[in-house]
Length: 96
Figure 1 (tube, rainbow, N blue to C red):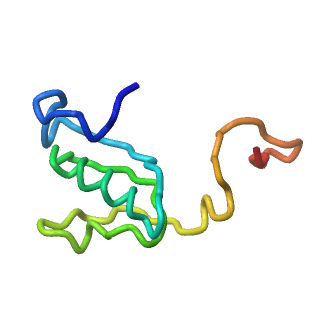
Figure 2 (figure 1 turned 180 degrees about the horizontal axis):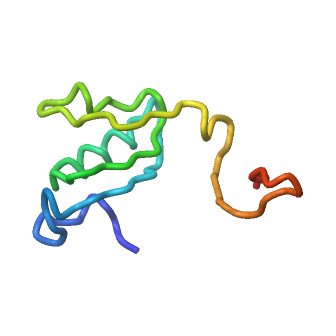
């Protein structure tokens, strides 16, 4: 465990060799999420997977833009945490 903001460019592969997934702290109006995403963009990842609040700055409007592959505003709506796990007797995901 360490502070994400202290990770240096030379510590991770860059560009086409890097896929990142982030579920940062959100902060007020997405402020903390925006800081985490901005840090991730320094590494120019090939793919960036984000779980962020709706008011986070969009990367498809960024310069250079990232292509938005998939967005689902309802999948985790109202859930503080999503933990894949048990299914009910009908095969549906049980809320944690």
